[in-house]
Image (cartoon, rainbow, N blue to C red):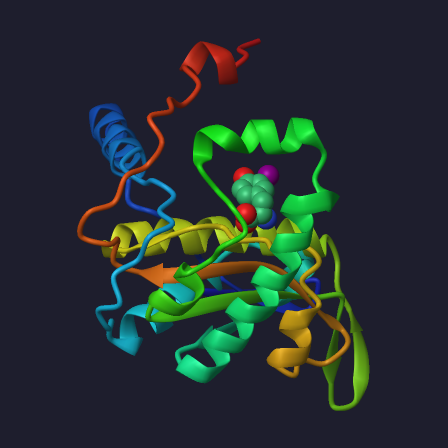
Length: 225
Ligand code: IYR
């Protein structure tokens, strides 16, 4: 592999194969159609899944770009039923209060078509919970390491993760119990890691339903200049 020093730092040559316009169009439409099959699913089958699948979707998430390549993320994988139970109990405790008094009426109205409520059985049914933490800063050899665009970086990594989960043939739901500090306590994460997103991962329950909702059209989301 060809190497070159830039600013005194080693660079390696990089290229991707030349692809015809026809092939580009086919690739793009195929990936869109595959991703358009993704749905948020809230009811899970308890069927186990090999850990290698979870390792590889997390490796995929780890390929995301990040501010100054600091990779400011930690992915905790929970398989232990007792820890899943603890997370469910704590999440439902918060969600119960949120639905009863913290969420304004308009918010609850907006959620009505999705059929959500405070109960979160998926936190125990799904064979794995991936709890994503964002690192406000890093720690290396006891020294503080500056991180940049942390939420953006971790958000992009979560997008990759969700795409990888779908591509593998599994389902998930982006669960954000609020507040979610209980996740730091249960999983005993250090103070510089903040809970970002909780993703149960598994097969969809044999008989489940998702809301009959549509995605915005190209004209609604694309502005050309
Ligand atoms: N965190 C709650 C409420 C909730 C909020 C939004 I915005 C959603 O898109 C879905 C749910 C819950 O998980 O039920």
